[in-house]
Every structure is written in C-alpha cells, then in structure tokens.
Length: 353
Image (tube, rainbow, N blue to C red; front, top):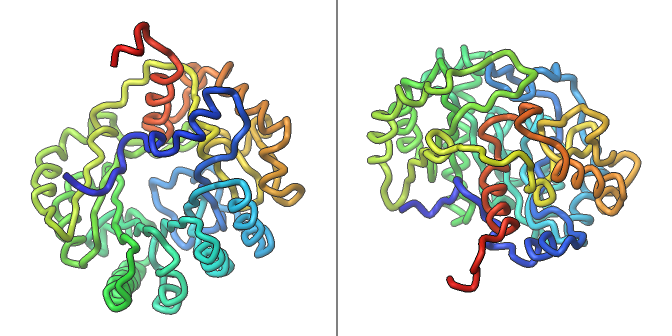
C-alpha cells in the first residue's frame, strides 16, 4: 500500500469546511492552483491549455505576495504552482514560495524541469511539500517529439532532477519529488521503461494518469488506450519498494462513471490565471460569465466575499448541467463530487451505521 493518495477525495480531512458547505455558510477554498505565468518554454502536444495560444502574461510580484497574506487570513491550506504555462518563467515564484513557508502554508510545484536549476533548487526546495516533474518519455528523441522542444531540454531536466535529489538528501528535506507521465498515443508503450528510468534517477515516485481533453483542443487520445498498457502498469507496480512508489491512477483509467449532472466541488478548489483572473475550474477559462473576479482590481478575499463569486459558484452547482455542457472527462473534481453527493443525498436510516 503506497503512502501517496492521489485518487479519491481528501475532504474527509477537512470536515469543518464540509460542514459549512452542508449548512450553506460562507467559506474560502482549501486549495488554489495558480498559473504564475501563461508563457511556456515548451509546446507539448498534450497541453490542456493549447487552445489559449500561449500568450505571455505573468502575475506581478505584488499579487503573488499579497495572495499569501490573503491565503493565511482566509485559511487557504495549500497552493500549487502549475496551470497555463511553466511556473518558473515568473521569477517572483521564488519569493512567493519563501513567504508561504514562513507563514505555514503548504506549497507544491509542477514543472517541466528545465528552469529548475541548482540555483532555483537551493532557494525553494525546502519550501515545498512536493514537486513533480513532467516527463512524457524516458528517451530524448521521443521526449523532443512530445514536448516539442530541443533534445537538450531533456538533458538539462535530468541534471536538474539529480541535483534536487542530491540536495534533498544532503539537507534531509521532507519534500517528495516525483515524475509524472500522462498516457497518450506517443508513450503508452513506454510505461515500464519510464518507471524504471524514474527509479534509477532516485525520485520518490513515478505516477501515470489518463489524458483529459479540453473541449477546445484538437489533440485527443482513444478512450480505451490504457487497455494496451495494463500489462506494463502491472509490471511497473512491481518496482515499488520502501523508497520508491509506482502510482498507477487506476481510478482514472477504469472507474469514472459520472452518474451526476451537477458539480458540487468547486467551492473547495479555485484556479488563478496569469492575467489575474480567477475561475472555478479550467472548464470555464476565458468565459466572462464564469469569472469570479480579477486580482488586478480586487484582493483574493474581496473576490470570494463578493456576490459575483458566491452566485457564480452556486449557479454552477445548482443549474449548470455538466453533461449537457460537455465538461472535461476525468476531471479532478470527480472524486470530490462523489464524496459530496453521498453527504448531500441522504439515504434513509443514516443512524444505523
């Protein structure tokens, strides 16, 4: 049994906020996913925001640092730097992460790794609860074709990972370092090879998850592609030991029945884009009707205290049919919705536990 929990809801560990949701009381999100930059130094064929065109925008230093103040006051527990582009293009991420550590807010980072140089690692590795490198193939030529970048980027990333692992050991840091692969047409047959590669590098885990297509993107993957990889999944899992975990996101691949039409999980997670706009989830990026607010005009707390944000989230929960509107499949809110549906839709005789 792995100690990493990536499939399913963690809301059972945040019952005070769940109780507020049940009672219709106001509360702030538990977690925020932040896009410090919409620019990227790669052009991956599977990028979920490819449809946006990769126009460069960066959150300002002032906004990034003010977010930490607001997170602390609003009891936001954690944030992930990821989103629209490569987070480390925004140089102010370093100061933001350091400030978050000082006030006790959990932080994480998704990166392609090219810019996670030894200098950056020295400044931020001890601020992170976890970090994950996106590597879609263990071979430089295939990596080049998927990430649509130079083969040299592969070599730079590997050296940066090695340094981060070395630094973690030297300083006895608690940060968990992982490699993530998304199963696509170009790498479904590389699962075992990728897992072995990750273990040899010395990261804490290797994980693979299903591709999720945004309705505005063109690149796609067959629904049943994962079936070709099942033997490789099972062989890869055998590589797990006390120091290394292979995490196959089985629940994504094999168990995603959506027997509900409303999304109830949006109050617990929010998305902050590089232009300062805040949306309930990536399905609504760029759609003015669903924008909760703009950090260039209001603070994070002011936005979530506003009638606009509260009414927008309630509208999605009560009136927006996610099936008719073709929400992304295999979305991160699915497990949260399953959990909240059980709480909200009481069966009879609940006291007979």
